[in-house]
Image (cartoon, rainbow, N blue to C red; front, side, top):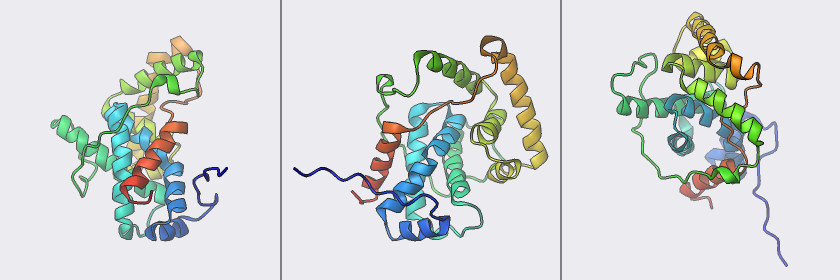
Length: 229
């Protein structure tokens, strides 16, 4: 009896330049490796802007399709992760501008291409075994508190604290001065403390997971759109 082979992924530690070179040649293992390394970050960034799970997944999928069909525009001036984050952020902000024309995100240039809304099924909560009930309750409190932050403060908090980008990376992606990033992060933390400190105390931020079946499903959907499966 034949067993299905597990999807191939590029070896850990493969450099950006090598992964990009392989991906340009439509190497499935390299494309999977890039996506699985960046899925969670891109999803959190998109969700931090849009505050909607389904639309955030749409943004991540569209980000990869654009990235893998325009890899010739990646020159290596920044890391591959930063380049992908910028595409995802522009995609999410483009949707936000269309939903809320009056919102001010003038610090970022508009996306090069118009967004396409892609139908993408939501995962059922019963299929998420990653968290216990108590952990999920705390997580929901944190997620709601982050969602309640004003737009400009929320995306800085997502980028700096949850994604762990440094001040310079955050400033580059958002088109802000480093001093502005620091000020907004300080204010975001103060607002969050005010909302949640008395309820749950210090917690380790583990909000908006994007792993397991969701990660695999999105990766397979992108590969299918690229004609690689």
